[in-house]
Every structure is written in C-alpha cells, then in structure tokens.
Image (tube, rainbow, N blue to C red; front, top):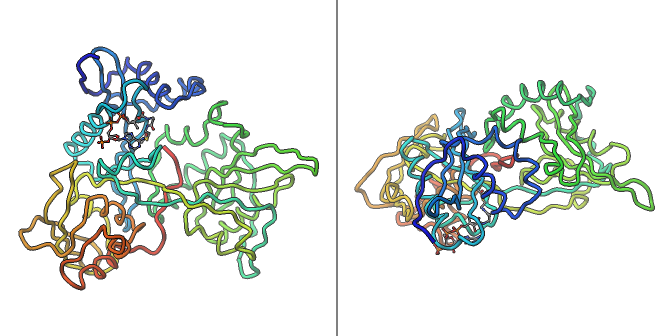
Length: 404
Ligand SMILES: CC(=O)SCCNC(=O)CCNC(=O)[C@H](O)C(C)(C)COP(=O)(O)OP(=O)(O)OC[C@H]1O[C@@H](n2cnc3c(N)ncnc32)[C@H](O)[C@@H]1OP(=O)(O)O
C-alpha cells in the first residue's frame, strides 16, 4: 500500500471517480448511467483519497439550499457519492474524506451539511444527527376518504415529459418554501428526479406526470398481471400540492387509476395528510425509516439561520469530537419574531448536549425533551429544557421528499 493523500479532483478524473463510486456500491448496472451523472460531477466539490496514484475513495457534495423553520432557506452542502473501493476499507479513508470535506465547508462558511446514509451507523461519529424521518406507505387501490375530505374537482391531466417538466419546475419552489427540509433544485437534480435509463427504472416504467392546477404527482407504474387480473403498482416519486384540496385530488387520481392494485410512496412524510384522510387507517401499510442526517458545520451560524417558536435565553454546552471549533458554551437568545443570536459565553451551561443532538432537533424532527428522556441531553438549570425544546418545536414533521 502506498502513501494516502487527499485532494479535490480534476475534471479529467470523472472516469476514475465513477469507477470508485460503482465499485463501492457493488453496482454494475450503474455503468449505464455513467454519462447521465457526468453533468452532476463538480470536481472542485469532490474530494478523493489516493493510494499512491490510485483513486480509492470519493465524497462529493452539491451546493443547495434547504428550507428550515422560518421564511429564509439555509445554504446546505448535500453530501453524496461517498464510497471507498472494496479492499481499501477500514483504514481511515472515509475519515480522511470527512475531515477534508468538513474543513472545506467550515472554510467556505456553509452552515449545515446533509446526507442520506446507506448504512445508518456510519455518520454519527462525524457529527451527523438524524434530522428527519420518512414513511414508506402502501395504499390499496380505491381506499376511500372520509366524507369530510374536500377534493378540488378541477381535472388532473397527464402531460408528456417536456410539457410537464416546465409546469412542475415552476410549481415546486413555491410549495417547497412552505415546508421544512425541502431542497432547492438544479438542472442536474431535476434530471435526476426524472432519469429514465434502465438502471433508474429499477423494474418500473418511465416517469409519468399527473398535473393539477394546484399541484402535480410524478409516478412510475410497475406491471403486475396476476391470475385474478391486473394489480399494477404505482410508485410515487413525489406529490406536490399547494392546497389540501389539490393534494386530495391528486391522491384520488392515483388511487382510482384502472388496472392498479396499490400505490406506493417510499419517501412520504411521517405526518403525511393522506393518513388522516382515510376511512380505514389500517388500510395503509406504513414503515417509518431514517431520512436526512444533518451536520451543523458551524453551530452559531446554523442556529441563527432558522426561526424559533418562542423566546428563550439559554446556554448550551456542546460537545463535538470531530469539529472542535463547535465545542464549548454557546448562548442562544431568541427574540419575539423568532430570530436568534448565538454567541460564545463563559457562563455555566444550562443544557449539555452533543452536536448530533442539536442536528436532530434543528429542523424540529426530534424534541430536546425526548432526547433528554433517552439520556442524550442533560438539563443543568431546571426549566431550561422545556423552554428550549418548545422554542425548537415546529408545527409539521420535517421531511425531505427526494434522494440525492
Ligand atoms: C452520503 C452517502 O453517499 S452514504 C454512502 C456510503 N457508502 C457506502 O455505503 C458504500 C459502501 N461502503 C463504503 O464505501 C465504505 O465501507 C465506507 C465509505 C462506508 C466506509 O469507508 P472506510 O474507509 O472503511 O471508513 P473508515 O476506515 O474511515 O472508518 C471510520 C469509522 O467508521 C466505521 N465504519 C465504517 N463503515 C461503517 C459502516 N458501514 N457501518 C458502521 N460503521 C462503519 C469504522 O469501523 C470506523 O470506526 P472507528 O472510527 O470506530 O474505528
């Protein structure tokens, strides 16, 4: 084994980058997507670890924005394509990548980073906390709604890909602004949403676009002919609606399509409204899974980027093993309008917690009171736990509807 070194990649290293990525994920079929991903490759935002001259580990990131509690989205590094070649593992390659990546984010003042973890035990050691949950829903065809559910009866129409993309790209940002955990999208991320190669399909049909005047759904059908007749499955990629009535209309459209046996959505919110619309709540199969993992790169800038539900003046004593610039005592003061100031202080800590706990509570996914019950947050000053937990609370469960 040669000497390990880390640096950002050059544009002519896309081939080597892709080879590591495909080898790390044990995915031969990825090769058919080699060209499709080329546009998303930003060498300056991709770190690589070399063993001598050989590229053996990679970690990329996208510079996006994420909606956080409050009106202004926050810049986020969306970490992606992390992999180490089999045969080179467990000797610190990922650790070196995370080190350089987080140092780079700190240097360029990116307040938070986010990722989806292939295996859930990997990223806590690097300061990532579980910030959103998501549900995997399966609803049977025709599942009836309560009679009180209002359905916008303007028609849902299927548009072809080009017409639809124009409409959905215009609609998505306005709805995203009203949610927590939704990402801004680049041309590359829109293309990835509707990729249509054999690998992207994974046994499903091409993406279809059901468009309502106040929303849209992107879904893919999977053929299933049984002895009893057709039981096709619809796989929802996203369902975006500006009003509850349009949301209900889009769901009804999907649930009532002929030939369909069930409608599946793998990245729904845990408090997805359709769950409260059903006459029979047991009709839905639901699994709750980990969603987005968040890293507060700089605790002060991250905490000041969101709004808070109530006033609080608290000293947080933060541990952070991987990014020591965050460790220590921070005074968090929130104003009547929900904005916050966060400053270094010598005062005794009221609450002791790890940076992963702050990440878990940052979007309102976990509560600080809940984290205290599991022993992760410790209250030193009586009353501060409840007050701070309430300040972090949000009305809806945060949710990121897309993979990256
Ligand atoms: C955002 C994303 O892209 S997520 C995708 C991540 N990539 C993959 O899952 C592809 C397949 N796996 C891999 O490529 C590699 O195994 C990686 C990237 C997960 C780990 O790379 P390595 O170079 O082996 O990690 P490294 O040697 O730096 O290990 C650091 C620590 O993480 C731990 N670790 C590494 N992989 C895992 C894992 N899958 N689950 C739990 N712990 C892990 C190591 O044991 C080590 O622990 P320690 O600090 O207590 O000793």
